[in-house]
Length: 305
Image (cartoon, rainbow, N blue to C red; front, side, top):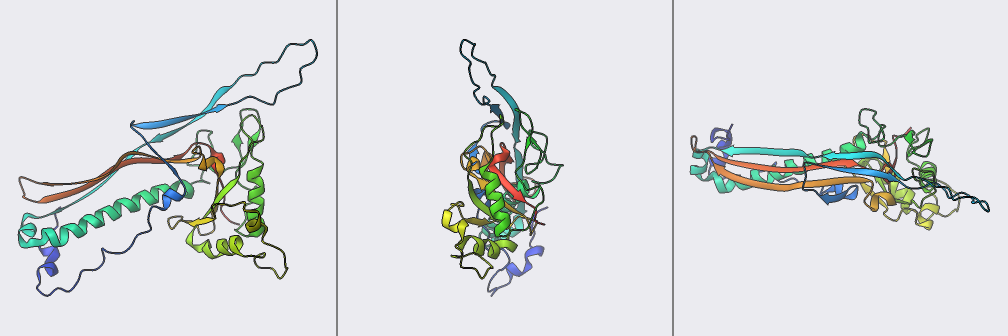
C-alpha cells in the first residue's frame, strides 16, 4: 500500500516548522565488534573442522614409528538470509512536491530499519548461545559444557556454575580460556581478547577493567586484570543483547577468523521505480548475509547467576 496525501496531510500545510521521529541516531555496526566479516559468492558457506595429530609417543629402540590419522570433524554451515523492505508514495503525493521533502527522509528510515535487523540478527547468535534449540556443528549450543572432542572427552567454554560478572568470575573465565585444547587434546595458545556486555553491565565492566586497584575492596592490591593486560581489546557494549546479566569474552581464535563470522553475500542496495498502473513511486532496500559460528573456542560466556 502506498503512502498517500491523506496520511501526510501535515506535510502539505504551509508554515510547517519541522518533522521529527525519523532522525534519531542509531548505534553504528556493533556486530563488527563481535564478528569477523567475509564476502561470499555462493548460496551458503560451509567450513569444516580438521583435526590434527595427537601427542607424539615415545619410539623404542628398534621399533617402528607409530602412525596417526588426521581427519575431518564437524562442519559449520552459513545459509544466507535475504532481508528486504519497501515503501511507496502515491502519484498525487509526488505531484504535490512530497517527493523531495519526504522521499529522502523515508529512504533514510528504510536504511535504518535494514541496519536494525542486521544488528538484531548478529546479536541473536549470542542471545541464543546457551539454548539447546540453536546448535552448532558438534550438536550442542555455542556456549556449552559438553563440546565433543575427536580425541575423546568433552570441553567447555563456560563455567559449570555460571556467575554474575565480577572480578572473581572474570578471572576464572580468563583462566579457563587459557587452558583450552585442540580437538586431539593438545594444549593450544588461546588468549582472551575482548569482553562484550549488555548496557546494564557497562559500569561493572569499566570498574573491573579500568580501576587502578581492585574494584570494590578496601585492600591496596593492584588490579591484576588491568596490570597483566589479559584483555587487550577492553570491553564493548552491545545494545541488542537481551539478557541483562549475560557477558561474553571473545578470544584470539575469534580474532584469527575461526570463531564467529558474518558472510556478506550481497551488500545493501536501494532502488526506486515507478508503477505503470498506479503511478506510485516505489522504493526498495535489499541485502543478503548470514551470521554464525565455526569454532566454539572463539568465545566464552556466562548467563549470570
